[in-house]
Image (cartoon, rainbow, N blue to C red; front, side, top):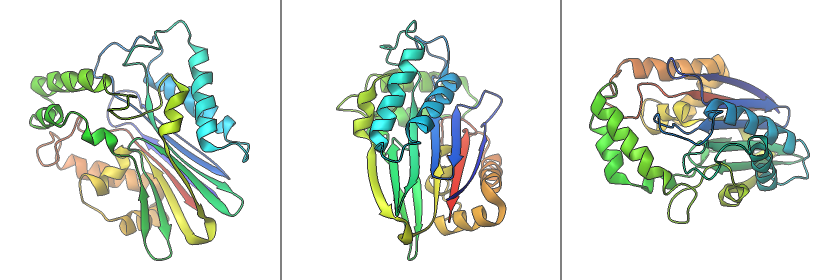
Amino acid sequence: MRVAIDTQPGGAAPNEDWVAGTPALAVVLDGLSTAGLDTGCRHGVPWYVAHLGTQLVAALADPETALTAGLADALERVAALHPECDLSNPGTPSATVAVVRERGALLDHLVLADSPVILEGHEGFTVITDLRVDEVLPELRAEVEQYETHTADHREALRRFVTAQRQTRNTSTGYWVAAAGPEAADHALVGSTPTEDVRAAVVLSDGASRLVTEYGMAAWHEVFMTLRTGGPRELINQVRKVEATDPTGRRWPRYKPGDDASVAFCQW
């Protein structure tokens, strides 16, 4: 498996995505925004995704390790790195997780939250994503989206939304992400596909997938065409060009003008 990767911050703030590729593995993590709220952790989201990603790649190097078991192990190991922090804080650093791994004649996948894996088959595309987060607090989400992204009203509405969202995070009535507890791994979407049925695959953070899912400015076959001709950086550049036409979020309401974007493109 050949993996091409790239990642780019959405603005001046540090990149809270993380991406890695090996000859058998592709991983994308998308750190959740804190909206400036307390997390109980002195390290921050970039530190968290970097350490979780490193631990996850190490755990999954053994093809006999199930993806969920590897994620659970990585979560435990990262928690053990900062016991002095308040890991029970509902805003503790957290991230979405999306993984593909080649294992013999199979391509395994794991998706936790809304960073998708897209498989290009011989007759179409399979999109694997977990959109439970979209079902949470729709009224507060709508309040955020009514304001332009650079306004004080938008920032305050986003803080209210994230504050309420944290109370549903990693609960049976909410949605699941990687945070401090290993039990989140049990709520990931997992599966396997024969590699002979897959022409290519891409793992994305939602800052990159929104070119299709949110902005509707490309279809999946166009995304794969771009990846083949220009690679991951060209796909991210296309996202930025679209966002530049709507810098304040009037056409496409969103949480920030540009989100961190990461791509891992897998070919055989």
